[in-house]
Length: 126
Image (cartoon, rainbow, N blue to C red; front, side, top):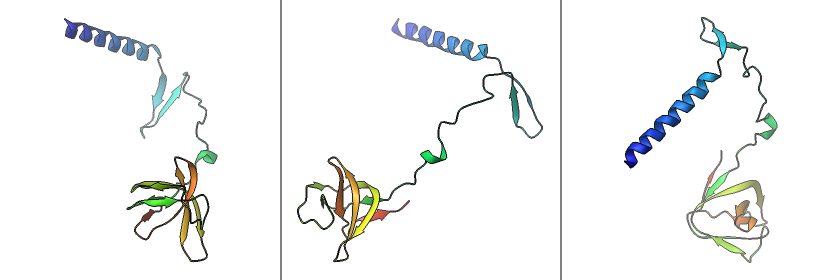
């Protein structure tokens, strides 16, 4: 009995969706190239949702292969936490300390922090 009820409900939903779709009639013409021109409908104009200013370039990611400390500042010797082996998203900011070590700003659960990129890590540049 439950199966019959659920089948009846599904058929009713499909019928109401089909009725709604057929209620908005759109008229238009099709050219020989396959492009359609729609006239007399509400689909003639639309607002742009995403503008070119909204598009931002992807930032590099770092694949950590071992536990890595993260710090509040570049060159800090005291870690504020540790990241396990994982893929970490960066902000794109890169610094080099006086010893030539590469530091990258990353997103952590405590906010933005800095990690010294270990030699065993892989940096993925988009």
